[in-house]
Amino acid sequence: MSQQSHLGSVTGSKRKRSCSETTPVEMLLGNAPFRWSELPTELKLNVLGHALVFDKPITPYVHLMHSMNRLLPLALTNKEMCIMAMELYYAKNHFVVQSVRYSDPMHNLSYPNPMVGHWIQDLTLKLGFMSEYDKYSWKHDVFSPSGQWKFLLKCNKFGPESDLGAEWYNKLKLNNLKVIVELSGEICFMEQRWKNRTLDFCHRTAIWGLRHAHIAAKAKNYTFEVKGMQCMKEDGTSLCNGACSKIIEDVLRAMVLT
Image 1 (cartoon, rainbow, N blue to C red):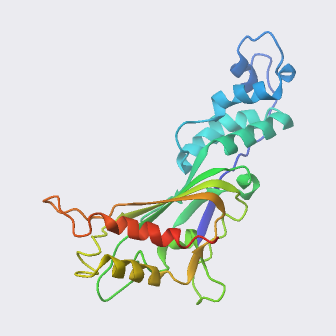
Image 2 (image 1 turned 30 degrees about the vertical axis):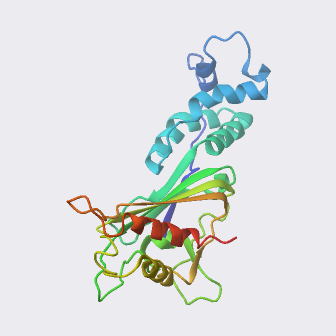
């Protein structure tokens, strides 16, 4: 498994500033008739928030832009500014962790640098699955412990050997973790794989495939969302009445360690 740590990769070198250049702090304050060092901490954070706190979740690609254009210039100002800016940026924004190459079976995951992980409060993990299910094979199936599940699930202590063993989140102390499962080519369970079966049977069978794993990521609150289930027919009817997505969400919810 190849993983890449992008969130928190703020690097750079200091250089001498000419008299005509303006520091990031001076740009934030404009022509304010006071020194930055004279401001109370609460007001400093309020000023920095206009440059470092964003309304929309920050994806790996957006993070690279923000870290270079917003965070890095402030972090290079001085030690106090570096700590204040880093903590504010990572603690007050919502970050998205996801594979950066969905088409590659050796997925690369963009995840928080352990050095800043303890500041992050809100995180969304996006997992993508290309369904190749048929009645003869469970390869790449959403209910088998393979593919991108390795970024979320960990094998139980006494379970069978597996490639499950996500550890990138060990340094995180999250308030909110949202897991989004994005499916491509997954047809209604009651239309294909479990045709003419009851919803209760579908639920029990779904749990069976992932019974030896659990979600080890620690968070105060968990949210699960499934996208891409093709349960609706052209005439607007559905055999499951939209229950397939809820089955997957219930399976994941039951895998959280209490």
